[in-house]
Amino acid sequence: MLRYIIPIFDPDVQHWSGEARFLRWLTFLWLSIGLICLFSASYAVAEAETGNGWYYMIRQLIWVWVGLQGFNWIVRSPLEYPLKLSPWCIFLVLGLILSTLIPGLGENINGATRWIKLGPILIQPSELMKPFLVLQSALLFGRWERLPWRVRLTWLGVFCVILASILLQPNLSTTALCGMSLWLIAVASGIPAMYLTSTALGGASIAVLSISLREYQRKRVTAFLDPWADPMGNGYQLVQSLMAVGSGGPFGAGYGMSQQKLFYLPIQYTDFIFSVFAEEFGFVGGIILLLLLLTYATFGLRVAMKCRHRVKRLIAIGAMVIMVGQSLLNIGVATGALPTTGLPFPLFSYGGSSTLASLTLAALLIRVARESNEADIIPLRKPSINP
View (cartoon, rainbow, N blue to C red):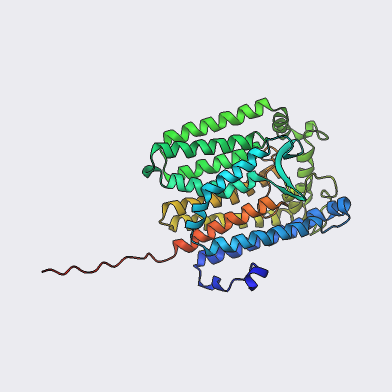
């Protein structure tokens, strides 16, 4: 009963493999740092908007509690269960993504219709799609040689519809992340290079076409190249983010002492939460956070390399790629290394959909670590009796 009230409590953990235990506590460490940073980044704006500085923090804690219930179910259940559910969940979430494109159903925020509003709750289906894409692509590419072309083309078509529907919201950054994740899972599975090359060229062409057709995306790219050319317009977000990161210095201004979060830095508790972290904890804090991500990626790859089951190995790779890759993309945007996008920082940024997706991916990686260290069961044949 205690494990449901306090989800981080689980007495069975002591029987897990070393990699699974370490990844579990590393996930909780990542989540704890994220919650600490979120409280600092959101308190002032929550106080100004709602009169309650804990407004965003309380809601995030509720989502974390819900996400940890699913996290515990996944790490204790055989991977066959989520793999069987993934095709149905793919089409369910795809239906939610397509519904955001219907006028009146999708919630428009900052010029993009990526959310569905259910009373006081906002759901972002494109975030929820990520773990199911990992599961289904691992299932497809892990069994590629044994599947007929009809099945291969059907699922490749479904993946294309998913990416196209996310792109139409419009959400180029999530489309690119999901596309690159699918491509890297295919690379890890050993798909012929001819297919991979043509797919990469096609994806790059679509990205260029999307940028050329949408003015606001072109402005983001030009603002990324020279944000100081329009510091109060298109370059405003990046300029304020760079000022926050630079103000941190070697050791930071101290927890809660960020000045840029006080209504200068936009969306400081979601897309630019790393900027607040860098200002308060400085260069040293940023390096420590990068080392945490490096450690997570290293153990994720170690789990994948030790796993002998092809599909499970691809699940581990996909989960690690999205968790770490999305984090690095968010950091790249905040530091001006990449054009401004709307990707949240996993387990840091405010948002229920992102939190649920991130905890699900982390749980899948840990479950692979558990199953890859279990002993193989060898069936015993009754010895034949010679006449």
